[in-house]
Image (cartoon, rainbow, N blue to C red; front, side):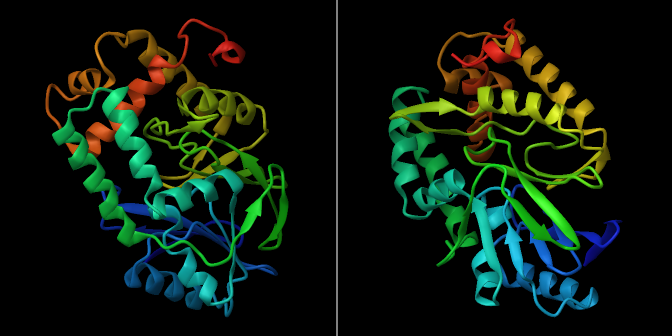
Length: 305
């Protein structure tokens, strides 16, 4: 178990995973309202690590779990913790995405869209869908959740956390902000080493990229006043505003460099030198779709459309 105090009564619990992401950072806030940020996957091993950490911190009962987003490495284990008495919080839009994933509807939408619009050949498309369906064993939809509103303020630990709407990676991604100390629990919104891949979702019956939303969220968070961010993957860093600026610049350079020729699938193969991998190609196609959805030379407020 890798448990480290990163701020007074705030602990980072690094949990190993049997996924393409080999680990995820969960955050425990000790105090009047014991709180966990993200749950890891649905796994007896992950559940045991969380219980061991709570015991070491002398937390007898976890009051709540705040989920940054619905992906299995962040939310899959939430139901087990709910059964122990913890309230589960998640953004409304992300809860809806989670439901669609668990009931299989998201696979049907992706199959039709990726085949017709992205130009993914039938054989490769089937492989991608199968690799995503494999993730179902790592998640379980909680029987009861509290759906968060944008800007909701929750007691957590010995203070409060504000739900900051940071879409892009998913449609309803939330980061959580501890204003007194200027701490941002950023989930997959701000990562120190990579650009988070943009999601894609249905908007008024049309599949859209999350990249324009992500760029606008970067602009908002840059001026939030946070002094440090705690990501779900990688080490905590200072200067979230600087990282927001770096990510925005990197994305715009990528979009400028990207050649908007051929299908999204063909462009993704260029990124991987012609090699297809169901996981890597899935991610790369989301990047390409995102680059196609923005105007590289436009001001941030004009990026959508």
